[in-house]
Amino acid sequence: MLLLHNGTDGHAALEAFAVGGAGLPDNVIPLEAWHVASTGIDLLLGAFALGANRVAVLAAGSEAPEYREALREQFALAETIVQAFGYTGRHFLVVSTPGELVGLDPAQGVSVPASFAFSSDKRTAVEFAVDHLAGHAPVRPAEIALPAGSPFGQVVVDVKKCTLCLACAGACPESALMDGGESPALRFLERNCVQCGLCENTCPEEAIALQARLVVGPAARQVRVLNETQPFHCLSCGKPFGTKQMVDTMMGRLAGHSMFAGGDALRRLQLCADCRVVDMMSNKNEVSVLKL
Ligand code: SF4
Ligand code: SF4
Image 1 (tube, helix red, strand yellow):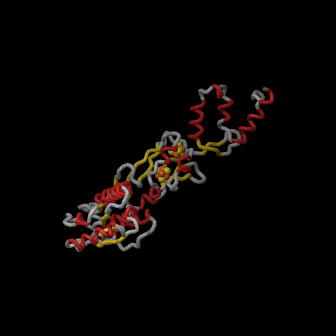
Image 2 (cartoon, rainbow, N blue to C red):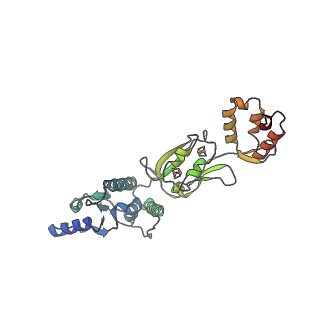
Image 3 (tube, rainbow, N blue to C red):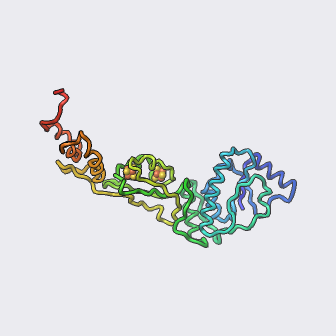
Protein backbone atom coordinates (compact mmCIF):
# COMPACT_ATOMS: atom_id res chain seq x y z
CA MET A 1 0.00 0.00 0.00
CA LEU A 2 1.21 3.48 -0.90
CA LEU A 3 0.46 6.13 1.74
CA LEU A 4 0.68 9.78 0.69
CA HIS A 5 0.98 12.39 3.41
CA ASN A 6 2.09 16.00 3.69
CA GLY A 7 5.25 17.18 5.43
CA THR A 8 3.50 19.01 8.25
CA ASP A 9 0.62 17.58 10.24
CA GLY A 10 0.60 14.35 8.18
CA HIS A 11 4.26 13.75 8.95
CA ALA A 12 3.70 14.61 12.63
CA ALA A 13 0.74 12.19 12.84
CA LEU A 14 2.88 9.35 11.44
CA GLU A 15 5.69 10.09 13.89
CA ALA A 16 3.29 10.13 16.82
CA PHE A 17 1.73 6.87 15.62
CA ALA A 18 5.15 5.20 15.42
CA VAL A 19 6.20 6.39 18.88
CA GLY A 20 2.92 5.54 20.59
CA GLY A 21 2.35 2.02 19.20
CA ALA A 22 3.37 -0.63 16.68
CA GLY A 23 3.47 1.88 13.83
CA LEU A 24 2.21 1.36 10.31
CA PRO A 25 1.59 -2.16 8.95
CA ASP A 26 4.64 -3.68 7.20
CA ASN A 27 3.12 -3.42 3.73
CA VAL A 28 2.62 0.38 3.87
CA ILE A 29 5.08 2.62 2.00
CA PRO A 30 4.77 6.21 3.26
CA LEU A 31 5.54 8.91 0.71
CA GLU A 32 5.65 12.60 1.49
CA ALA A 33 3.79 14.71 -1.07
CA TRP A 34 4.01 18.46 -1.63
CA HIS A 35 0.24 18.71 -1.22
CA VAL A 36 -1.90 15.59 -0.83
CA ALA A 37 -4.91 17.37 -2.34
CA SER A 38 -3.18 17.26 -5.72
CA THR A 39 -3.55 13.46 -5.77
CA GLY A 40 -5.57 12.65 -8.87
CA ILE A 41 -6.91 9.68 -10.76
CA ASP A 42 -3.73 9.52 -12.87
CA LEU A 43 -1.61 8.83 -9.81
CA LEU A 44 -4.18 6.45 -8.29
CA LEU A 45 -4.63 4.28 -11.38
CA GLY A 46 -0.95 4.55 -12.32
CA ALA A 47 0.22 3.38 -8.89
CA PHE A 48 -2.32 0.55 -8.94
CA ALA A 49 -1.21 -0.62 -12.39
CA LEU A 50 2.44 -0.46 -11.29
CA GLY A 51 1.71 -2.81 -8.39
CA ALA A 52 0.33 -0.96 -5.36
CA ASN A 53 -2.75 -2.90 -4.25
CA ARG A 54 -3.94 0.23 -2.38
CA VAL A 55 -3.28 3.96 -2.41
CA ALA A 56 -4.23 5.94 0.67
CA VAL A 57 -4.00 9.63 1.47
CA LEU A 58 -3.56 10.79 5.03
CA ALA A 59 -5.54 14.03 5.32
CA ALA A 60 -4.59 14.87 8.89
CA GLY A 61 -6.64 18.03 9.25
CA SER A 62 -4.84 20.95 7.62
CA GLU A 63 -6.60 20.44 4.26
CA ALA A 64 -9.57 22.66 3.43
CA PRO A 65 -12.91 20.75 3.39
CA GLU A 66 -13.21 21.47 -0.36
CA TYR A 67 -9.90 19.68 -0.95
CA ARG A 68 -11.05 16.65 1.01
CA GLU A 69 -14.27 16.54 -0.99
CA ALA A 70 -12.36 16.77 -4.28
CA LEU A 71 -10.08 13.97 -3.10
CA ARG A 72 -13.02 11.74 -2.24
CA GLU A 73 -14.51 12.28 -5.70
CA GLN A 74 -11.24 11.33 -7.41
CA PHE A 75 -10.87 8.27 -5.17
CA ALA A 76 -14.48 7.17 -5.78
CA LEU A 77 -13.95 7.49 -9.54
CA ALA A 78 -10.75 5.44 -9.44
CA GLU A 79 -12.51 2.80 -7.33
CA THR A 80 -15.39 2.58 -9.85
CA ILE A 81 -12.89 1.91 -12.64
CA VAL A 82 -10.82 -0.65 -10.75
CA GLN A 83 -13.94 -2.48 -9.56
CA ALA A 84 -15.25 -2.58 -13.13
CA PHE A 85 -12.05 -4.43 -14.06
CA GLY A 86 -13.00 -7.05 -11.47
CA TYR A 87 -10.50 -6.28 -8.68
CA THR A 88 -12.11 -6.96 -5.31
CA GLY A 89 -11.76 -4.91 -2.12
CA ARG A 90 -11.32 -1.19 -1.43
CA HIS A 91 -8.25 0.16 -3.16
CA PHE A 92 -8.31 3.92 -2.65
CA LEU A 93 -8.75 5.45 0.78
CA VAL A 94 -8.73 8.91 2.32
CA VAL A 95 -8.01 8.57 6.03
CA SER A 96 -7.72 11.09 8.86
CA THR A 97 -5.44 9.04 11.14
CA PRO A 98 -2.77 6.35 10.50
CA GLY A 99 -4.70 3.97 12.76
CA GLU A 100 -7.40 3.62 10.08
CA LEU A 101 -4.88 1.67 7.97
CA VAL A 102 -4.54 -1.14 10.52
CA GLY A 103 -6.59 -4.30 10.07
CA LEU A 104 -8.02 -3.49 6.63
CA ASP A 105 -9.72 -6.25 4.63
CA PRO A 106 -7.60 -7.57 1.73
CA ALA A 107 -7.67 -5.70 -1.57
CA GLN A 108 -6.85 -7.51 -4.79
CA GLY A 109 -3.96 -5.99 -6.75
CA VAL A 110 -2.71 -6.59 -10.29
CA SER A 111 -1.26 -10.03 -11.05
CA VAL A 112 1.33 -8.53 -13.40
CA PRO A 113 2.71 -5.11 -12.40
CA ALA A 114 3.08 -2.66 -15.27
CA SER A 115 6.51 -1.42 -16.29
CA PHE A 116 5.66 1.82 -18.11
CA ALA A 117 7.38 5.06 -17.18
CA PHE A 118 4.94 7.37 -15.46
CA SER A 119 3.87 10.22 -17.72
CA SER A 120 3.56 13.77 -16.42
CA ASP A 121 0.60 14.21 -18.75
CA LYS A 122 -2.41 13.13 -16.71
CA ARG A 123 -4.48 11.77 -19.59
CA THR A 124 -1.55 9.79 -20.92
CA ALA A 125 -0.85 8.35 -17.46
CA VAL A 126 -4.50 7.23 -17.17
CA GLU A 127 -4.39 5.70 -20.64
CA PHE A 128 -1.24 3.73 -19.86
CA ALA A 129 -2.79 2.42 -16.64
CA VAL A 130 -6.13 1.54 -18.25
CA ASP A 131 -4.38 -0.16 -21.19
CA HIS A 132 -2.37 -2.27 -18.76
CA LEU A 133 -5.47 -3.24 -16.76
CA ALA A 134 -7.30 -4.03 -20.00
CA GLY A 135 -4.63 -6.62 -20.79
CA HIS A 136 -4.37 -8.25 -17.35
CA ALA A 137 -7.55 -7.63 -15.32
CA PRO A 138 -9.95 -10.38 -14.19
CA VAL A 139 -12.73 -8.62 -16.16
CA ARG A 140 -12.11 -6.77 -19.43
CA PRO A 141 -15.02 -4.46 -20.26
CA ALA A 142 -15.14 -2.56 -23.56
CA GLU A 143 -16.34 0.52 -21.70
CA ILE A 144 -17.10 1.53 -18.13
CA ALA A 145 -20.14 3.65 -17.22
CA LEU A 146 -19.14 6.54 -14.96
CA PRO A 147 -21.23 8.91 -12.83
CA ALA A 148 -22.35 12.19 -14.43
CA GLY A 149 -19.71 14.87 -13.95
CA SER A 150 -16.79 12.47 -14.41
CA PRO A 151 -13.99 13.89 -16.58
CA PHE A 152 -14.19 11.16 -19.23
CA GLY A 153 -16.87 10.49 -21.79
CA GLN A 154 -18.45 11.28 -25.09
CA VAL A 155 -20.82 13.85 -26.50
CA VAL A 156 -23.88 12.50 -28.26
CA VAL A 157 -25.17 14.66 -31.11
CA ASP A 158 -28.75 14.52 -32.34
CA VAL A 159 -28.11 14.67 -36.08
CA LYS A 160 -31.74 15.61 -36.77
CA LYS A 161 -31.24 18.85 -34.82
CA CYS A 162 -27.59 19.58 -35.66
CA THR A 163 -27.12 22.15 -38.43
CA LEU A 164 -23.31 21.77 -38.43
CA CYS A 165 -22.85 25.39 -37.44
CA LEU A 166 -19.68 24.25 -35.57
CA ALA A 167 -20.26 26.62 -32.64
CA CYS A 168 -19.55 23.66 -30.36
CA ALA A 169 -16.16 23.03 -31.98
CA GLY A 170 -15.27 26.68 -31.46
CA ALA A 171 -16.26 26.49 -27.80
CA CYS A 172 -14.44 23.24 -26.98
CA PRO A 173 -11.33 24.08 -24.93
CA GLU A 174 -9.76 20.63 -25.39
CA SER A 175 -9.95 20.23 -29.16
CA ALA A 176 -12.17 17.23 -28.62
CA LEU A 177 -14.67 18.61 -31.15
CA MET A 178 -13.29 19.59 -34.55
CA ASP A 179 -14.51 20.65 -37.93
CA GLY A 180 -14.21 18.42 -40.94
CA GLY A 181 -11.45 20.36 -42.70
CA GLU A 182 -12.47 20.65 -46.34
CA SER A 183 -15.84 18.94 -45.87
CA PRO A 184 -18.76 20.06 -43.68
CA ALA A 185 -18.49 17.66 -40.74
CA LEU A 186 -18.27 17.60 -36.96
CA ARG A 187 -15.57 15.27 -35.65
CA PHE A 188 -14.83 14.10 -32.11
CA LEU A 189 -11.80 12.72 -30.26
CA GLU A 190 -13.06 11.13 -27.05
CA ARG A 191 -9.70 10.89 -25.25
CA ASN A 192 -9.58 14.72 -25.18
CA CYS A 193 -13.10 15.27 -23.79
CA VAL A 194 -13.21 16.38 -20.16
CA GLN A 195 -17.05 16.57 -20.09
CA CYS A 196 -16.96 20.28 -19.24
CA GLY A 197 -20.32 20.86 -20.94
CA LEU A 198 -19.30 24.05 -22.79
CA CYS A 199 -20.36 22.54 -26.11
CA GLU A 200 -23.73 21.51 -24.68
CA ASN A 201 -24.35 25.02 -23.39
CA THR A 202 -23.16 26.64 -26.62
CA CYS A 203 -25.18 24.59 -29.10
CA PRO A 204 -28.02 26.80 -30.41
CA GLU A 205 -30.04 23.74 -31.42
CA GLU A 206 -29.77 21.90 -28.10
CA ALA A 207 -28.45 18.95 -30.09
CA ILE A 208 -25.73 17.83 -27.65
CA ALA A 209 -25.94 15.53 -24.62
CA LEU A 210 -23.01 14.44 -22.46
CA GLN A 211 -22.39 10.80 -21.55
CA ALA A 212 -19.75 10.06 -18.92
CA ARG A 213 -17.91 6.81 -19.59
CA LEU A 214 -14.42 5.37 -19.98
CA VAL A 215 -13.76 3.59 -23.23
CA VAL A 216 -11.21 0.80 -22.81
CA GLY A 217 -8.81 0.25 -25.68
CA PRO A 218 -7.83 2.32 -28.71
CA ALA A 219 -11.36 3.44 -29.69
CA ALA A 220 -11.14 6.56 -27.49
CA ARG A 221 -8.04 7.65 -29.39
CA GLN A 222 -9.65 7.45 -32.80
CA VAL A 223 -11.37 10.48 -34.33
CA ARG A 224 -15.04 9.84 -35.08
CA VAL A 225 -17.42 11.72 -37.34
CA LEU A 226 -20.47 12.78 -35.31
CA ASN A 227 -22.30 14.46 -38.15
CA GLU A 228 -21.61 15.33 -41.75
CA THR A 229 -23.51 16.64 -44.68
CA GLN A 230 -23.15 17.89 -48.21
CA PRO A 231 -22.02 21.47 -48.77
CA PHE A 232 -24.70 23.81 -50.13
CA HIS A 233 -23.85 25.35 -53.51
CA CYS A 234 -24.84 28.91 -54.40
CA LEU A 235 -27.83 28.84 -56.75
CA SER A 236 -26.23 31.52 -58.89
CA CYS A 237 -22.49 30.81 -59.19
CA GLY A 238 -22.33 27.27 -57.82
CA LYS A 239 -19.72 28.10 -55.18
CA PRO A 240 -20.05 25.96 -52.02
CA PHE A 241 -21.02 27.90 -48.90
CA GLY A 242 -22.53 26.66 -45.63
CA THR A 243 -24.23 23.29 -45.41
CA LYS A 244 -27.45 21.95 -46.84
CA GLN A 245 -28.79 21.37 -43.32
CA MET A 246 -28.02 24.94 -42.29
CA VAL A 247 -29.69 26.49 -45.35
CA ASP A 248 -32.71 24.18 -45.06
CA THR A 249 -33.13 25.10 -41.38
CA MET A 250 -32.82 28.81 -42.16
CA MET A 251 -35.36 28.55 -44.99
CA GLY A 252 -37.77 26.60 -42.80
CA ARG A 253 -37.61 29.14 -39.98
CA LEU A 254 -37.90 32.24 -42.14
CA ALA A 255 -40.45 30.99 -44.66
CA GLY A 256 -43.36 32.37 -42.65
CA HIS A 257 -41.74 35.73 -41.91
CA SER A 258 -43.25 38.79 -43.63
CA MET A 259 -39.80 40.03 -44.72
CA PHE A 260 -39.35 36.83 -46.70
CA ALA A 261 -42.76 36.72 -48.38
CA GLY A 262 -42.67 36.70 -52.14
CA GLY A 263 -39.85 34.30 -52.89
CA ASP A 264 -37.00 36.67 -53.89
CA ALA A 265 -35.76 37.11 -50.33
CA LEU A 266 -35.97 33.38 -49.66
CA ARG A 267 -34.07 32.63 -52.85
CA ARG A 268 -31.41 35.10 -51.76
CA LEU A 269 -30.76 32.96 -48.69
CA GLN A 270 -29.53 30.33 -51.11
CA LEU A 271 -26.94 32.64 -52.67
CA CYS A 272 -23.37 33.08 -51.50
CA ALA A 273 -22.39 36.45 -50.01
CA ASP A 274 -21.09 37.86 -53.31
CA CYS A 275 -24.08 36.80 -55.37
CA ARG A 276 -26.44 38.11 -52.68
CA VAL A 277 -25.00 41.61 -53.08
CA VAL A 278 -25.18 41.42 -56.88
CA ASP A 279 -28.77 40.21 -56.64
CA MET A 280 -29.77 43.08 -54.36
CA MET A 281 -28.08 45.72 -56.53
CA SER A 282 -29.63 44.43 -59.77
CA ASN A 283 -33.13 43.94 -58.41
CA LYS A 284 -35.28 46.85 -59.66
CA ASN A 285 -37.88 46.29 -56.96
CA GLU A 286 -35.37 46.40 -54.15
CA VAL A 287 -36.06 49.18 -51.62
CA SER A 288 -33.06 51.55 -51.59
CA VAL A 289 -32.08 53.80 -48.74
CA LEU A 290 -31.41 56.48 -51.39
CA LYS A 291 -35.12 56.56 -52.20
CA LEU A 292 -36.37 56.79 -48.64
S1 SF4 B 1 -24.01 20.12 -32.32
FE1 SF4 B 1 -24.95 22.15 -32.15
S2 SF4 B 1 -23.26 23.62 -32.03
FE2 SF4 B 1 -22.40 21.66 -32.76
S3 SF4 B 1 -22.46 21.85 -34.99
FE3 SF4 B 1 -24.36 20.85 -34.39
S4 SF4 B 1 -25.84 22.52 -34.16
FE4 SF4 B 1 -23.82 23.48 -34.19
S1 SF4 C 1 -17.73 18.45 -23.03
FE1 SF4 C 1 -16.09 20.04 -23.05
S2 SF4 C 1 -14.25 18.93 -23.66
FE2 SF4 C 1 -15.98 17.60 -24.16
S3 SF4 C 1 -16.41 18.06 -26.32
FE3 SF4 C 1 -17.73 19.38 -25.06
S4 SF4 C 1 -16.60 21.31 -24.84
FE4 SF4 C 1 -15.13 19.74 -25.53
